[in-house]
Length: 533
Ligand code: ADP
Image (cartoon, rainbow, N blue to C red):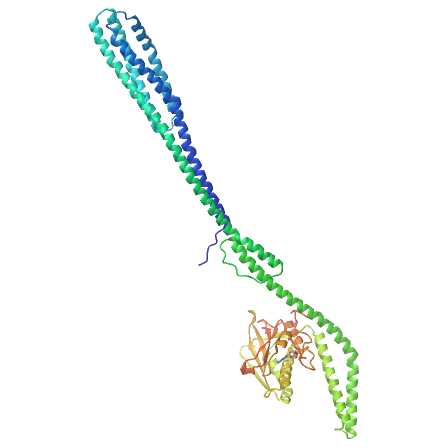
């Protein structure tokens, strides 16, 4: 299954995003808690403490009022007590209203439900007390009137009734004060707890954030590590080291980059080889051109004298024969001169062929027919040399587009080389097998002529320089034959290569001349557009 690559960018962004979210959450939560605590402390400071002290004062006033009331009836001089009662009656409901406004302020400030509940409860209690005190007003007036009328028994009764009602309000005030004090204590305890909790949370969050940070950093380092290797490789490639190295399977973009880089280096290496080959070919072509010029010159200078020398030598030979000295030393020397002249003429012709190889005129040709005609042409020569000729013409070989005379020349070169190699090695039963077969190269369909012999095969030296111009291992060789043959193959869009022949075909050298198949409509004839020389 194909492995999904993870993006370095996604990994790093995800790592930092997690960090930011974690920090944001902790900071937000702490701020929220802190805000609530500050509000609660403000409520405690600005409302609860003031209320507690105010209601405490009211409760003290109530106690004093109860004491004054309790002895009012039996007092001889009631002026002071009555003045105190009047003062208390005047001020206490105003103070209640002030307390009520403090409670409302608290309700506006409070965020906590406990605070809101306590303040609402306090507001209700204050209302009840206010109602109680407003109902007490006529009772106070009645008691004062009764005291003025000196009805002490009734006054005592009214006084008891008032005392019990005032007791109720005092009790109510005490309850409120206790509740407010308890809340203040709860708030201060809560603030302490919260501070400890915030500290714990901050330490934990910091530890988690550090861990996440370390993990993200390690992950980023691991992801970026291959960059250093990639830089070293780029420097190596810049120095000209074009060999590829194995890289681990890509996990992310950087891994993909390394894989692609190696692929690019591989392609550069191939291109380098192709360039070298092209350069070699260019050099060979240049040398060939030089040979061409030289050959033209040599031909011009040497050909005519050579042919008159050949003619003269022939006449001299004839004369010696007519003088009845066919076996004489002079006749032997003349024959030797004639052989050398022949060889020089052949060499001159060969140079000319290499130098003036024209652009092939391609026609649709049947390779088997061409091979048969060529073999017929060399039968005589081969049988004189004692070489057995074999041919295998396979079925289904596609037609090719070829310049008949050039192709024949190429085959003759291969056959002559085979014969000479076997002759020079002194092979006992020399044999050449020519095989025509269908063969595709680099996915291109085509046909091949394979010339195999039972000679010694190619030496290492020959294998290394086989197609180089002027390379020869023969004392009288020119080193032009294979070079020319390969030129012909390339000019036909084909190729020529050497290999070891199968044992059945002699086990010596085998030369494979491959040509691409003619297109199906192959009626087109005329000058080729194939790569010229
Ligand atoms: P020449 O025949 O003039 O030497 P070629 O270019 O035709 O030039 O051949 C180059 C060399 O290749 C030969 O000298 C020989 O060493 C080697 N060679 C060619 N054909 C064969 C073969 N069939 N068996 C062994 N060696 C061969």
